[in-house]
Image (cartoon, rainbow, N blue to C red):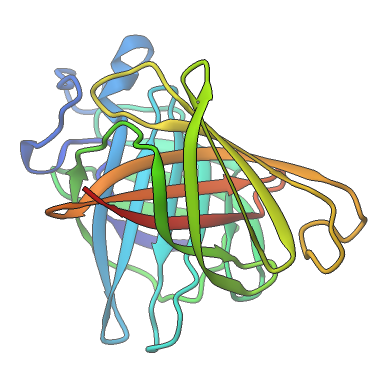
Length: 272
């Protein structure tokens, strides 16, 4: 079992900045039902490793679905973010778990896809310890990261310019996504990468404290697309959220996976 000390701070608000409802339970008390909103939202931190500060961003929904991108950087080459996906359970005010094999990790290095479980303990205002079971990562144990809660925003139509990364085909592609109103409150966009045609739909979820989107992706069958080798169209699902990395810039993060946990991510910016 590897250990990864992460301050993604899902279990407590970093520095008192949480816009979600405060958790008033005593340490170790089970949290369920409406109290799950205290875990919701996006967090951002950095992990010092190999002379670089690697970025870690995550989002937990009110229903305790958890997604994360770990931009592990070991050289000056392009960064292929590692995708984490799981569902938190056995949640208390300072601990939680992801039951095996409910945690999936998709990465550039072998094994590209692995599944296992995780235990989250020792949660504080800025950190917790994540014990991984059955997951292999190209990093040493006991990494520390400081994280703060991100304010997230509602969707803006128009162009988002950035990078789409798919560890399956080792593709990291400069990409622009243009989203238009798709009716019924949804947003739709399309593009392509590595011979894979993409059609995206983002559906805003009905909460105001930590806005986010359910994301649905269709990839049509196409010759040369690593995602459709059997000439069969596929679908992926996941999450999208928007934060502000700097004044005057909004950033869209998309994390999409298939049923196995294999997935792709998009990070694009829009000037405000």
